[in-house]
Image 1 (cartoon, rainbow, N blue to C red):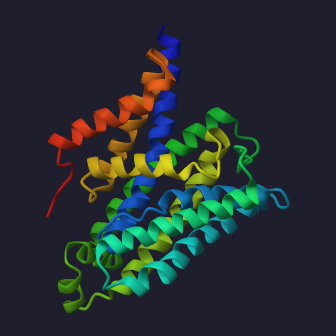
Image 2: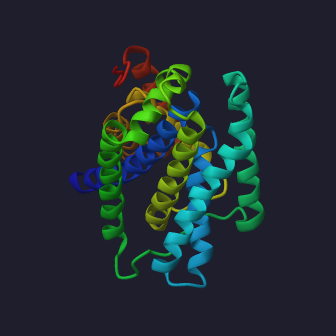
Length: 276
């Protein structure tokens, strides 16, 4: 019994690290537009799929930077075409527009890469599945720590936090909300593309996988209060462990229902990492 549970725990930590990384993308973009960007899951999927295609004609270590750049470009394109023209629009309109962007990106992925799940190659061919799993977990921890410091200590990070608190007051203090949004979406796209090329070889990618990742990333972000990257990481790992252990101890058929039922209960009583 111990061995299956240990395997389930490692799988849960891997999945939870991916959920936490998507949650960090949710938090970054939400800080800029004060609502959830529903295209975040597609940033992750497209980054991994672009890496898969590039790695077919170039060494993976050369394809990786190009895929990360493509992810950043995808984020910047959504910000420029879908977010910036609607800066004065109601938040509900922004949510609808990011929903449309998500559907467009998902449709493009279906047309280009098809319906079948895809496993990109390992960025470092000599690293096996166990090593790649450890790399994903370490990457999630590193991104969490770096983003925690960046939001608190750097000028762009503080500007983004000020924009999230009160865009008008931030603008009055000299913060450019357009530049803050551009920074947030570019960083989110690059972060998620890099995460997908690391995690894709051991978790697989599919054109419609962004929806499930988005929901779990939002859950991780809400557990963390949409503010603290460390709280987002813990929320993502908690969701991953619940899903993995449910599948190991009971049945994978019930993991979504149990995960989201528990998430609703937690969010009813837990305000996450709210801070001033």
